[in-house]
Amino acid sequence: MCGSPVCSRATRSPRRNANPACKALGSVLTEDVAVSVPHLPALLTRIEEISAAYGVAVPTVAHAGDGNLHPHVIYDETDAGSVARAHAVFAEIMHAAIELGGTITGEHGVGRAKASYLADQLGPDVMALTRSIKSALDPLGILNPGAGI
Image 1 (spheres, helix red, strand yellow):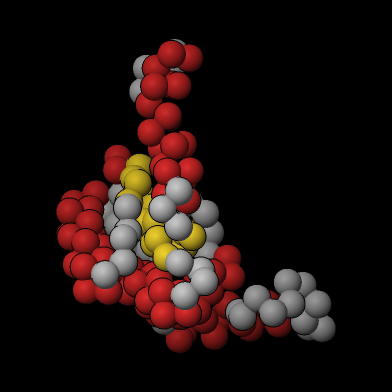
Image 2 (cartoon, rainbow, N blue to C red):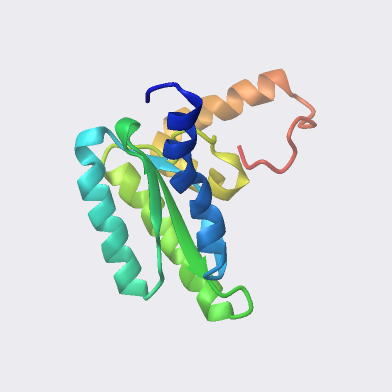
């Protein structure tokens, strides 16, 4: 990026307009996933295949230079089948990123939306270690209750 205010506005506008554009299509389930830059084409191909398999639109915005993708799963929140397909698509995208050696989060953290995929990425040993550290620091379980760690 050039750093000038004009250049900054020009390069940010498409990314900033992606969310409103996707929300105009329906409800949106979005998060971020990341892979190494050489794996970006494979992950984009997987997202396209998953989208086609479920018949669910998944426009994807990226910070391509660092391998960070923001797939936007579009669905109809009033249709239970559409909601179920959206969550299945979301899960498959998380697993695709992991399978390609990437991560379920590139910049936004795991949060509650992706907590169920953390063990798939880290494995049981790291999750057990994480739980033991949390238990040592929070023996009463009062910090971040219900977070699933």
